[in-house]
Image 1: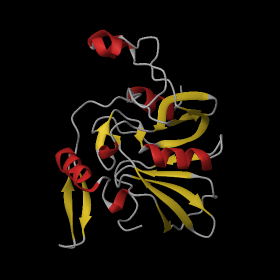
Image 2: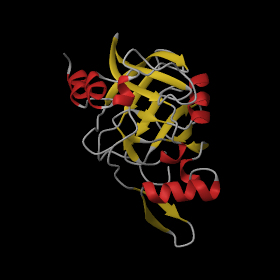
Image 3: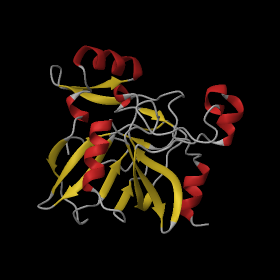
Length: 216
């Protein structure tokens, strides 16, 4: 088993929605400072504005990289996913990432893509959660499925790492450390990314502490 796969396996990527969430930060244009962004603030903001803060909305940004167009670069510290475009630009998406203790990093690839994917809870979750036990054989894709509208399955070579880039039933959670290791996006964004990315595309997940500069 390779080092990357050991990291993935050790992180127990359950891709579920529950657990203690850590706080991230957003830029407040009024005070011109970075402020704490936690679940309670995120829910209030989403209810008040019908969406996430501007920092986490899909947008084209300048992005200098040696990676070729079509590459995905994930900056979990800043809660951004970049899809590299020609001309030193990228589409930047807001993401939710694994809570503290479920961090991972490495270079993988998109092994397959699925529309409205089936979610199968791991055995540990089935054993402790009657709601999860109901779907021990797999929860069909649909609007209530935790994996959302689309899923990109991350592989190391030909081996499934168990990690996914997927949609969510909790769009307010974008920008937070709240999932169990997978990369979550709001459904509109994951559909947009799904339509752009090719199977086999390179995916770079930055190590903790290796975040790109703020404002990129």
